[in-house]
Image (tube, rainbow, N blue to C red; front, top):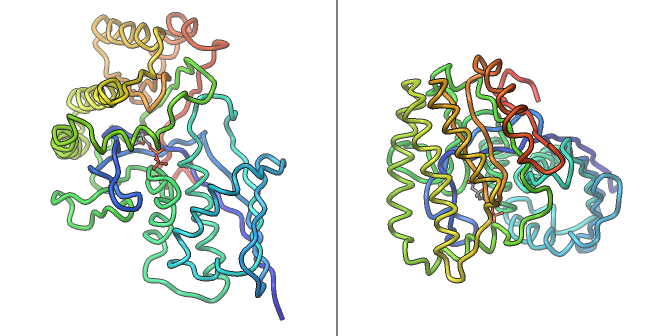
Length: 342
Ligand code: DP6
C-alpha cells in the first residue's frame, strides 16, 4: 500500500561575518565563511509526501498561496539532491512554507527556507525507513544545494562553511558548528536590522556570485577571506570584540567593493546605508562601546553588539537611525544558540 508522510520543520536566517562570495562546481564556495543564526527571522515548512510510481510532481505554497513560479527553481534543486534522497524520483511532494518576517522587509529568505526544506526532506527520508551517517551534515549538504548560505542555517549558533586547514572537520559540502570554540561574549549578540529598502534587490546574489568567476580581484578576495577566517576564529575564541568589529566591517565593505568592481559593476548600497555607517562609527567613538555593523548583498545595515549594550544602543537607533529606514522599519533580532529552542 502507498502511504503518506508528513513533517514540519523550522530554520532561522543567518548573518555572515566572513562572507561567502563566489562559487565553484555545484554550489561550493570559493572561500570559507562564518555566520550566526538569528532568532526572529525563521521559515516554517510543512511537507507532505505521497508515495507513488510516477515521476515526482510538486505543489508549492507560500503563506497559503499557490506559487507555481517557484516550481522550476524547486525542480532544479530536487534534481541536484536526488542522488542523496532517491525517494524524490517518484511520488508527489507538497511544500507549504511561511516566514515569521515580512516578505518585503529586504531580509533574504533563501537561507531559512532552503534550510527548513532540507530538514523536512531528511525527516521524510528517515520516516521512509532509510538511514544515513550523520543527520546534521546531510541536512546542511542538502540545504547548500538549494542556496549556499542555507547550509549555515540547519543548526543553531555559529557555523563555518568551506574547507580550511584551520578546522580539520570543515568542508565545502556542508557547514560545521563552531559553538564550542566561542567566548560567551559572542553568545548574546544582538542584530538590529535597519531596513533601508524593503523591496527585493536589483541584482540577485546568484548573479553576483557568478561575476566573481572572472573578477580581477578574485585571488586577492580568496586570500582575504581565508585570512579573515583565521582572525575571526581567534577573536571569537578570545572574546576580542575590537578585532571582531574590524573583520566584520572589512568583510562588509569588501563585499560591496567586489560588486562595484565586477564587470558589469553595480551598487546595492543606498545613500542612507552610508549615512547609517557614519553615524554608527561616530556613536562608537563618542560612547566607546562595543558595536559594529555588517551588510548582506543589499542596502540594509545589521548593527551588531553584545546584549548588555542594548540600553544605550536601542535609544541611539530610535533617535538617530530610524529616519534612514523605509517606513521607520528596524527589526530587532538576536543570535539563536542551541538552548534558545527554535
Ligand atoms: C552576501 O547563499 O544567497 O549573503 O548560493 O546563489 O543561493 P546562492 O547565494 P546566497 O549568497 C549569500 C551571499 C551573502 C554572504 C553570505 O551569506 O555568506
